[in-house]
Image (cartoon, rainbow, N blue to C red; front, side):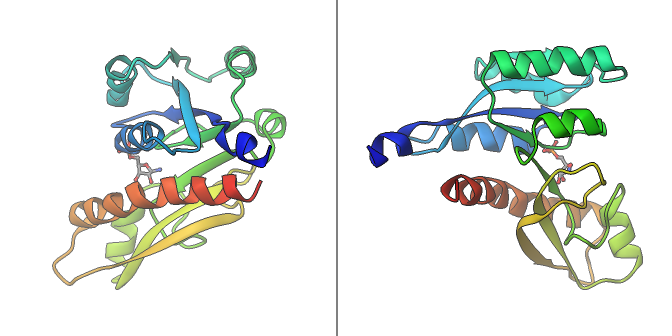
Length: 193
Ligand code: GRF
C-alpha cells in the first residue's frame, strides 16, 4: 500500500514571468522516470514571458493572466482546483500573490530566490551582492508567505564569488546551482509529507 502511495505523482503548476530556465529544468525533472511530480500547468502574468514556449514544446497547458485584479486571481484559483494542483512552484514570477491566494494554498507554494536568504531579499540581487564586495552568495528555495522572500527555507546552496565576477557572471553561476537545488528541494518536501 505504501508503495502505491509513493507512486502517486504530485500535480504541479509553475508560475513564470521571464526566460523560464528553471521551468525548463523542472519539466525535465518531472519527465524523469522516478520523478515525484507531474507539471500540468504553466501560468504567466505576461504573454511576453519567453518561458511560455516550453508549454508548447512539452505540450503542457498554459494560462496567461495579468494578476492585476481579484478576478484574475479567482480565475487562476478555480483553474488550479480544476487541475487538482497540489504544489505551486514560483520560478522567476514577478507578481506578489495576494494574502487570500496564499491562504488558499497554505504550505503549498514554494519559490526560488537567487541569494542566501534572509540576505538580499527582493530585486537586483546579484548587483547588490557584487556592490557589497561579498565573497559568497547562493540560492534558496523557500515556502511563500505574505511577506516577500521571508517564508521558511527548505534548502540553500552556497556559491563562491571570485574577484573577476560581475552581476552577469554571478547570475550564470548561481542559475546553474538553482537548477540542481529546485528539484532537490521538491524531493525533500515531498518525501516529508
Ligand atoms: C532566477 O534567478 C530565480 O531565482 C529568480 O528569477 C530567476 C528566474 O530565472 N526568482 P528563469 O526565468 O528561471 O531563467
